[in-house]
Amino acid sequence: MLAVVKIAGQQFKVQKDQTLYVPQISGNAGDKVEFSDVLMVDGENGLLVGASVKSIVKAEILDHVQGDKVIAFKMKRRKGFRKKTGHRTHFTKIKINEIA
Image (cartoon, rainbow, N blue to C red; front, side, top):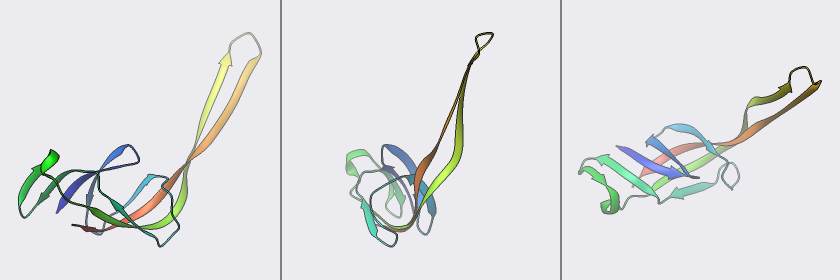
């Protein structure tokens, strides 16, 4: 069974027992979460899209992690201006338990 679900403003293609990294969502490790904004389901009943989808994706939060460091370097030549900033994006690692 395959589903397309909207999590934190982004769309993800998910299957049962899949682990994936999504933008940070609230909750602690071990918490169960449900995503009701399912856009498409491909299962035993065929392909369901749009308003006819009544499924819920159930998942478990495994961990909160940070992504790789992203560097933003600005420079104006011959002016002596250099600015180096960076950040690490926060992600949540989740495991899809059920698509119901």
